[in-house]
Length: 107
Figure 1 (tube, rainbow, N blue to C red):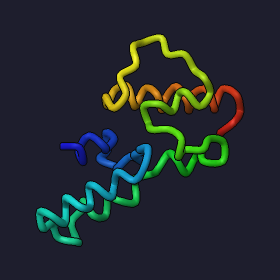
Figure 2 (cartoon, rainbow, N blue to C red):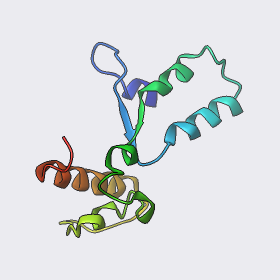
Figure 3 (tube, rainbow, N blue to C red):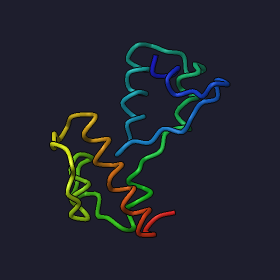
Figure 4 (tube, rainbow, N blue to C red):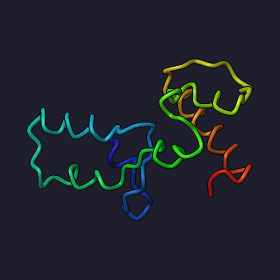
């Protein structure tokens, strides 16, 4: 289901970003359940990107989780913070990347 979610309308795989190496967990589970290494799911791994690699020159990512990343720039969220809640963590990343982009810290 997640594999299908990560495709566009023409079934092209989209790039996926996470705060860390989430693909390692997916690969671990594929091995655990004996998926073939020729499986489309193993080939999918080249579409995963670690946001930490994009921002590491501007933020010491060792000091933040995905849910606290917004604190790197003292951003004040307009919603309740719920660290380790997937929706909040995604919003924290978005707020930070948006701030960085708006301030020409990333392109």
